[in-house]
Image 1 (cartoon, rainbow, N blue to C red):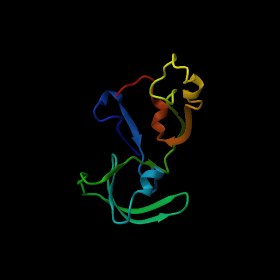
Image 2 (cartoon, rainbow, N blue to C red):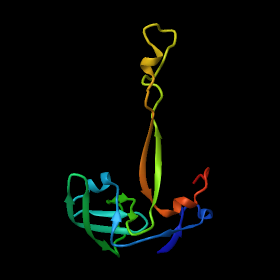
Image 3 (cartoon, rainbow, N blue to C red):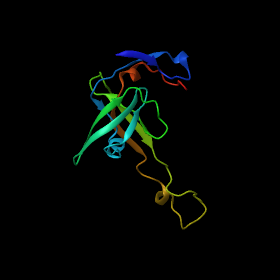
Image 4 (cartoon, rainbow, N blue to C red):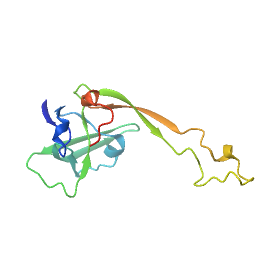
Length: 143
């Protein structure tokens, strides 16, 4: 473990712990779009050449080689990652959809009933893992 700036463009936000090991988590969508022989960039770390991809119904496993001296990031997929051996934090992500199904609602139009254009389910929650630093964040911080 070592420390890095929370945000490179605003050093006033301080530093956070950064964990690195040989076992990482990537988002499933990101991992499932990576091919053998492809070079990827792990954000705040560097480039990795993917040597083996193993896919099952519910997971993707990647094996790769860290390219220590490779600084060519222009043509690579940039991926966020979590160290699977770090003390990860469980969070609940909340997303809201549009309240109305239609782009426009005219209450004077007798053909359109409000209940027909209102989305009944607009809040979606997902449980996820994140780096332990999120426990120290204050609300209302803008970057």
